[in-house]
Image (cartoon, rainbow, N blue to C red; front, side):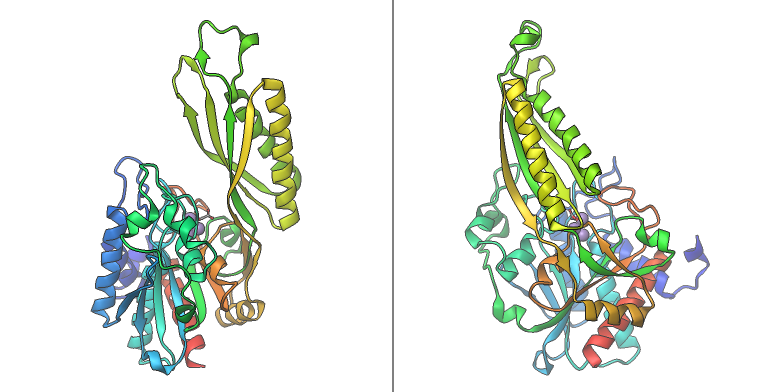
Length: 406
Ligand code: GLV
Ligand code: MN
Ligand code: MN
Ligand code: MN
């Protein structure tokens, strides 16, 4: 490993030391992936760690009443702050870097600036957003949507996890909803994130700057039929929702390929879920994304029509519900260009959603990506080299200096 050849005390080593503090938290021994669902024990430990890191650096922490944490470095009277950070929560058996990299890098970037004797003219705030993945309560970027008022408080409060616990119950109080007075004190947001595809490996670049986030969303298909005996029900007499479901998955894949879009059915629930019973109900969640909004709408419409046609043939029912939708995000082009030339980094779009995508509608926002050598994400195989992570810290420190001192 290149890292082993670097001196003790080098930035890659300091990155590794801090990273190792959180690496075991929420890791599943079997898959090697992470189970860090929002406001569950592992994520609460990470939030505790956030407080400790802030304390260690003399940074006061505030909670916005929505579950988002903010640690401040610098005089709040000095001006509107530059916000950086990301999220701690993971998808089921997710990778180590998606989210936490942006928070760990932010603390190290503050250390770098302090060690260099930089006194920012405006504060730097490190944020940890709650429920970015939507893995527990179903709506991604829930914390940033609440802070910005992009989701109604009642709807967010009533979202329930698989055990029936509501978001409001998990949070303990609130949620508070939109906090314009808090949001208004941020001059800009910069989220550093591991790259989740192969674009930067292909570009041979350790650091990239985001240009856009594809429009995307989640749709729930509920296919209903007649539960019955697998051995005694004649094939001609069946109303099997599994068939309609299976056809719909294939149709989504085909329609996405035809359009250069992305469609995934990564979650399914079968009732009663017995080997020897024809299901009475199958629920499948479609995740669809495309570069242009019209392509995405066309894709979802086509899948809806095909599912309905097939349901008629199968004698089943189908209902479609939109669970979340995120419009196309075009990041501030001037800011992206400025950071790309500062860092000599490529500018690229992404199909992954981020809190930065929500905040971009409310304040100048940019994203930095750190190369992912496998290109794999939302999987235990996600990775990043310590040397590239250190380059990410250096890049973030330069960006924070640029945005706070000029
Ligand atoms: C979140 O990571 C998403 O893009 O689904
Ligand atoms: Mn993710
Ligand atoms: Mn993420
Ligand atoms: Mn994400």
